[in-house]
Image (cartoon, rainbow, N blue to C red; front, side, top):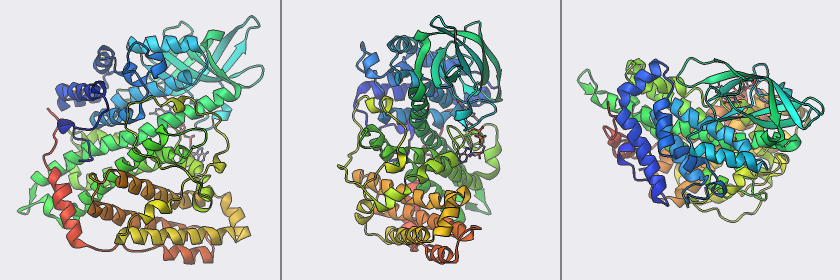
Length: 573
Ligand SMILES: Cc1cc2nc3c(=O)[nH]c(=O)nc-3n(C[C@H](O)[C@H](O)[C@H](O)COP(=O)(O)OP(=O)(O)OC[C@H]3O[C@@H](n4cnc5c(N)ncnc54)[C@H](O)[C@@H]3O)c2cc1C
């Protein structure tokens, strides 16, 4: 059973402590119950009960302290495998509880990546005391444009500094034990990361910008005194720490989408199965079967892809940076698929999805946030496009990456090195995965990939069009969607080959049914772009293929995997 069901929780963990953390967290939310969870959401109550629980059980300390700094406890480690599940569980219950964990991860990034041992030891202690953290990157006027950062750090000539400026949209900035803040040196203009405390007299938490349980603040530093011991990194190291932290954090966004969609799925199918219209159960309508089966397949693919991407994150090294493609895809592709799943489910649950007592009501609001955090979908797509040439035309050789579920600290994530040289990164040949499967829809998808390659070769050969289109981000975003689908299908097959018990051939086929349709959809969009040439239009049309129909297979998936989930999970009231 690939989807999370908190009431039948039996996922593999390499150690008892990890299992205990997940079960206790599930118990915290089930004991709180849906009524209180929703009441707190509506009243925008700061989640102090959750943070007290986290403190008592030392949960953030166990999950977010790299093993070097968690000496007295062998369970302390930064382990992406178990953090995936914790992400999923939190968002399954409510995104705001996930958000305080997520921005703590971001705040910790520049600290664990720095050479400042004093701050690192202090941070380990603060985590043990139940501290949460914040990441002060964004500024009101500058959005994704971090180059324009205005927060200033001025040297006083005596080895001390003064910080002044404002940050905007900063989670946990009301209560964080430390806020990692990105600024620029007034004298040299170089970047600098330093930490500030939210209780200091020169720190002003101006206001909460959002109207929800979380605190997403504007804060100001008014000549805040900074000592060398507060500085995490300077110059290129500070810049790299900002981007490398986002590399770690953005991966979690996909997991939050998976958690939201899973809970929403249970609510939607339970409602539809119990609702009788015109003497028929709603789940007997053919279009409802189609909507729920599509939602299920998309959700399974989201989770399988994100799990496989974790293997690449956990085995990454200076020589193997393939995670830099798969990781933004977890952010960009998985979170937008999450929106698609909620759209499908909303057409099933319909009016009930607006009711204040449902989880669905918050799912429809919160699912929209994830594509927008930590770089928008566009920013991540612009990043991914840099990998397209090598992915298709210059594969490298790498050892096979197994499933990486063992309990180890993911050291490389805090030592990722320079953020440059993306277009030089190589990937293993995607054909290896595709050739391992010989099934009708997968074979159709392979045909679409071949036509996409033909499109890319023809486009490169047309110098005038290639020059114009290389500057047209609108055109590239659509092309990027097609490229993303190829890598998405590839890692999905790799996951399935390593976990055959989780995904049958029939489910694989049903999933490629929607992948073939999505490929055709983006091909049509590419055809319709203003700058597409007649040759490109002709090739785009060839990518529009129809999945191989198999009614019997569909019915078996519906009955045995989708409808079988009716009443499998309901949250305690
Ligand atoms: C609820 C919430 C919590 C947040 N928490 C934090 C936090 O804790 N810490 C923190 O530092 N920040 C935080 N942020 C800020 C978040 O990271 C920013 O929203 C994000 O960086 C994008 O900025 P923006 O939304 O202002 O969009 P803008 O950057 O203003 O973008 C406007 C448009 O231009 C496009 N665009 C911008 N740059 C490019 C590009 N290079 N290529 C293609 N298209 C581009 C965008 O996709 C978008 O469509 C939070 C935001 C929200 C909403």
